Length: 98
Image (tube, rainbow, N blue to C red; front, side, top):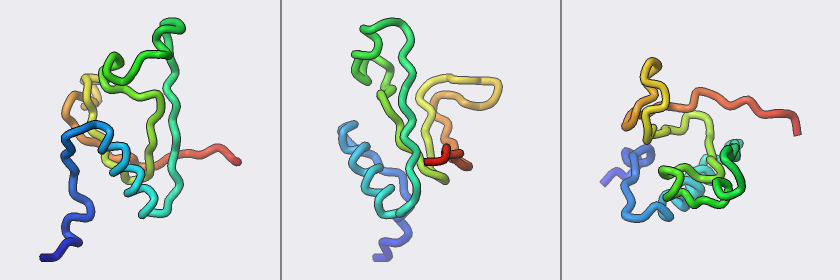
């Protein structure tokens, strides 16, 4: 069987914790710059302590690379197509110096 055809396949995992491991392993294999985007918490001290289950799956940080596929899990901006279930691709990332 030709395994190369599965290199860019979408993974389905039984546990969310597996997603992070799969993504980090994939990023390492690509040997590219990874953007670490930290969440901005609004709503007081309790909000910043909430886990991702309470925050509708949102995590305290997001790791992204160019050409990564991102699945939208909420209706963020219906007018532009950023709706629940849609898949988008990261076109590029601007990094600050250093």
